[in-house]
Image (cartoon, rainbow, N blue to C red; front, side):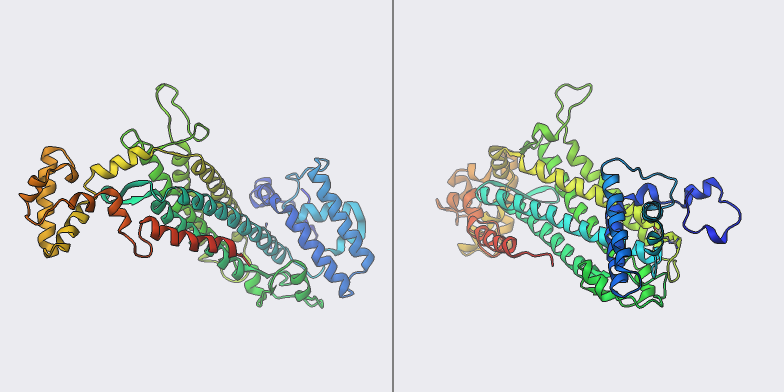
Length: 462
Ligand code: ARG
């Protein structure tokens, strides 16, 4: 056990307590960001004359050599150390001696870990934005291809009105676009540097916090040292945004599972993203989509866990806060895997366009348009609704679509029906006439696709 804080102690710590307290098994992810932060801190200490330039160089070179030794497998991060900060400092001292003992001047592990988490989370916001961007590009491609691929739109999972696949996918484009914009908000709110806050009350050394913030590409330093070491709001926001991403992925998964079912057969999932059954040879299961839907639960759970951890913590740092890491890392890992896999699965999905079209034609999805036809001929809407209602009942009995009825049959429900009814209620007409902004007609979709293209071209995270 190699601890940083032995001086005040006479006895040694209980082994279980040591393991319980230690965080190295999971905060070793901070290796790179901890080195980055310590180098910036040492650079600032030298510029302020708190350590010499030579010491700063020894510190930076020493940290770089530890980093490359770990990367090359020459040095192992072991549970002998309490956390990644202790591991790095102890190894630095081993390598460069006294200069290594100065790296922690004017710093506490509280602001050190706060900085590491910010740096790590910031790069994860960038990573998630890239994944969301890729999802949007994939959807954009598909939307362009399918402006005339007809399918039923549903309410209550009952066929409602015809739409196109482009339009249906466009709904997800909007959801993931908002998710991406949430990443931008989070980035811009969190991008302030907590380094220099010390344990909670700053320090008496003449640190230049603006300079370290600038070195680490933050917009500036955080403005209250107690808040700096105990703020986890940005993680909660981020995990909440990840939960929303997962909620969208989960809804989309649910649709793919339904569309892939034997009853629907709207899609065929590529073999690369499905699995079989150990007993039933005919099976091809949508496991990836089901797992994405399943993993949504744990991402929500992680958010609840951190919110609950934070709710009773008095200012400033308390060890409870170490619990932020595993929950956060789990949300990051799972959301990133789900986004990556789901986007790839989507890009390779085959749509059975004939089945989708047939399904749209068979479900009375043109009933509203048939009522609108009568309204255009002068019938009040409520009466037209009732005429078409009776007509649908008649068709259900005959097991046919409205389009299959003869003009005579139609006229027995209303004299207002004429030959032009067939064209008025064809699938194409029903969709093509829906021209308002955001509606499914190919013309309306093309305008939205152009707006989306502009969004994709001009989007910037910072
Ligand atoms: N492993 C700790 C954490 O994750 C680092 C900070 C330790 N600070 C302390 N005062 N014990 O929160």
